[in-house]
Image 1 (tube, helix red, strand yellow):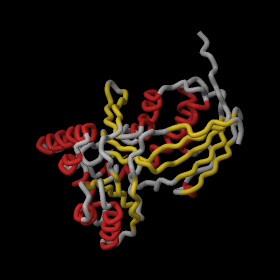
Image 2 (tube, rainbow, N blue to C red):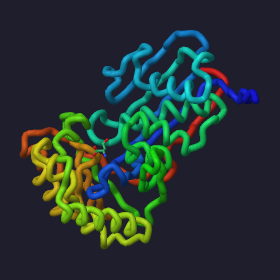
Image 3 (cartoon, rainbow, N blue to C red):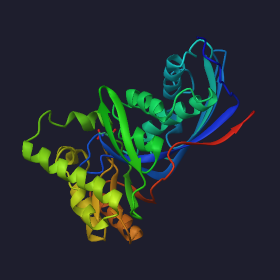
Image 4 (cartoon, rainbow, N blue to C red):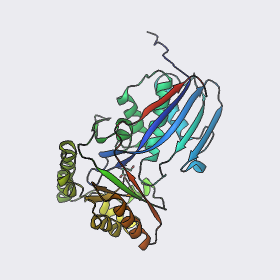
Length: 316
Ligand code: HSE
């Protein structure tokens, strides 16, 4: 049976939240969407022509031709939905606020933004789970793309080769203070320092903390977060890549944070708190400086909506 062409066309603008993956114990599994956003506007072209412009964080690093990573992302969606021969180019504007290669999900934002916008443009051939499957295939693990798509706190899993997740809005008015240092760290390098095997005692330690963290978030038990944010699977191996990791986390706790962890693969360090956000941010920046790194602190809340279409108009 011939499938019906549902293409809507026009110009689609989407907004995608930043994310923090792992959250301490939940390596490659837990994630949280934060209210700092990248936006992207898209129109697909039938001809092979590209009109791409980027503004804001990392704009100078993004290619403006067909080698653009968002185009590769969109091409995969076009091919999986039977549209690869119909659309061969695009006009795109990218407006970025999320620091690049810092552990705040900027690459997940680009992937999810490209997929969400192209999917809308084509009349939504994929549902959210379909977008999650493609995004995970491109990103390699689901813990950033899941909260970027769904918003809130997410528990992701890969089952029989397919990603799935439960996402919900935590019942705690948490603030996240992110201390973003002025150096980048590639996820590849941060993964290369991890051992293939870990002692069973560490596995048990992390299973208990990750489960407790999900339960505490769901049940609004802020008093369990200090315990629940502990980790032995990745941070002990990665912290040598981040000058001052122990000092920054200790400074955040001393200034009033409930707990403090590496955001994703780093180098950003994220402190969770219910109060004293400004003092915690200042203490973290100061501790980074004492270790020779400039840093900025940003206070964020939890994003509740995930990737969303903010406008869909006829023309530019
Ligand atoms: N879970 C991933 C990691 C997140 O820690 O390597 C970064 O992409």
